[in-house]
Length: 77
Image 1 (cartoon, rainbow, N blue to C red):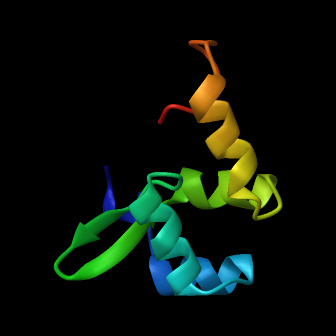
Image 2: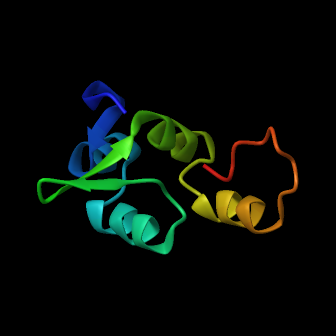
């Protein structure tokens, strides 16, 4: 993934109106995509946009991941 496709978790939290700790918790739960690089967490831009599209409610994504059978959905990453 290109570096410009990654958003530092603190910047993503500001954009989304939440805390970096909430986003990190979601990453650790596997609900939100993220990667650790040189000791700093980053979120893929598409994950930030998806989170915003759900209104910050990652539970909808989690429910879809748990039950989705549609190969074209994209909820499985």
